[in-house]
Amino acid sequence: MKHFYCGESKSPIIILHGGAGPQDPKTEIVEQTTKDLVDFANSSLKNTGDGAMSVVAEALLLLEKSSCFNAGYGSALQADGVARLSASIMSGDTQKFSAVASVPYLTHPSKLAITLQDKRSRVLTIPGAELLARELGLEVSSSLDERRVETWVQKLKDSVDMGDTVGCVYWHNNSQLIAGSSTGGRGFERPGRISDSATVAGNYCSKFLAVTATGIGEEIVDDAVCAKLETRVRDGMSLKEAAAKTFEEALEKKRQYGWIAIDQEGNWNVAFTSKGMSFAVCTADDTILSWAQVAGKID
Image 1 (cartoon, rainbow, N blue to C red):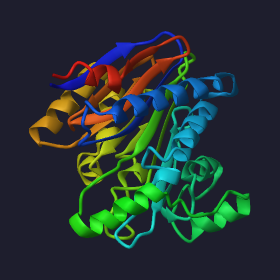
Image 2: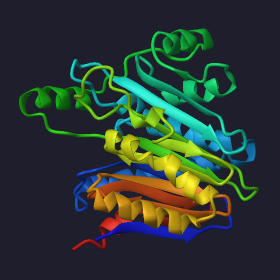
Image 3: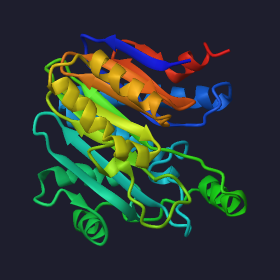
Image 4: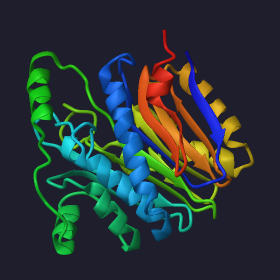
């Protein structure tokens, strides 16, 4: 089954994803993560009157607070048992990219990524990221979750992969676009590995398109997925055409990743080449499509 979905909205629309990977579509986890994504989307849309950035900021914060997703509090641990988090944000209005990369002891990296939008240096790692967080009074603490520690211990025995990025794209009908991403990384990787989430390959936004990716980070970076999709739309392709071309290229290369995207007219796209990707496409009035609906159609 090809996981490629498109649609259009005339009202403000938000798309959240909870990561791509080897997810069994028939488990209770699909139903629970979809419910969480829909709830987070609806909660975030209540901030529409405060501007597009506030909507995405709230969505990322809720995803980071949940231990069900590999971001913030639920982040996977690297090979040395430390969670090093990354996050990025980009606004279509300003076309400024800001990010923190591979930062420990910062439960909500998205907060710092958003703060960096107005700074001269907009992409930070340690020690600068932690120092700035302390200056701003942001919480600096361990993001260890009991379930993730247990998974890390198990990986010491069998090296089973688990976990992925979370992301959000948002469009307001005055054409405001925002893309945001947050992650705890791949899990059990070499300490200090930088995620695609802290690059324009994994998260990108302009006045033409907001897009954020998830999956195998190195493949996303190799293919410059988000920047490539945006360039194709900027150069005149429709979102559906640009996404279809990028999707077919990913299939040919046997890639394992996916993305969520919205263009300046409210057209949206969700696509992934992996077995699964939790996601929810929502407006203030309705849940348009979700991973639970898609998974329910799989034989």
